[in-house]
Image (tube, rainbow, N blue to C red; front, side):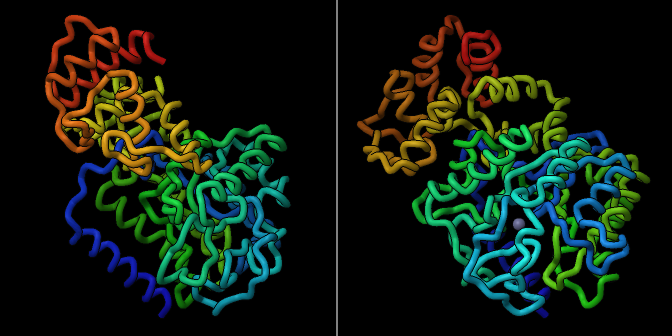
Length: 449
Ligand SMILES: [Zn+2]
């Protein structure tokens, strides 16, 4: 019944999204939500949330082995590698009490508790140091899923009674605590994060993307639900729900999982069961049959960065080169969108070094008063870039205003290129041409950073 409600809520959300006017453009962002990447090879990534978990699977066919140990055994058997999206500890998430079994509140009304209420020391990097050590020793990666797994801002309907973090500062401190712990005790530097329950918007206007920028992370999304987290009437049905959709997808198109990121859970579902303990091997068996390599997300993005521009595209080295040089040329949804015309706000973002965007977010997080510039207030995602380009005379106001949505003109580029060291540069307002020119001026020639 609850599962049905959740499915209906998800369906309603998808439908509403479709009905809303299409916001195809989105915003350029130094932090991209990587759900999947364009790739023709049979390689996919697998991610496991909420562990590591020292309690045994339920039902247990392993003789009492820690769930994470069991998952690692299975991965090793198949030569597969994954990203473990770990927490620190939920032990501070009290006072709290359990909600109704089979609902999202089963493990706590005010907070999440992993692996379960009143046994918080059986999961997380703080008390399960050995499991973190084993994950790393066997070639898997880690991602930051929040020290206390508290949501970043309010989430209505299903999680209405949940406590949530109030500000960018609180999120930063929570994530930094886990970041420091993994660096100090395991020598591991995190570069990925996934917010608890994918909640992104904080009451103070900052978002998970802003805080990930400060920490040097990319946002780890997912494109294929490995399932196993939604309860079904029986355990066997839960295991089948993990395997059958994947089988059907691959039978219809053996390449369907190329470049995809699979979501899994390293913990209990709402019925306190762990179908992943049996479902994982069956999924990996399928993937092996179709010739897939299963890798951590970091390895997947080393093969291909973007969702709509693959490594075979002639423009791939240009866009990824600009990215490496510290420039923001890709949208927050990890698409390059070469077909879209460039706006003035976007041109400002293209030429602004990442450090400048970091500085703006830090100032906002610390509550520094920032005055409006060209009619843009500090909450605008392009505020830092507009400030940078106007202060340096790279772009100019029009009638005392800077309209970030206005299309660029050849005059914008004729003013910009000479200041970046370009003489004799052909002016074209096509996105691909601008990126190619900027790559020469900023990244490719070594003149930029
Ligand atoms: Zn989680």
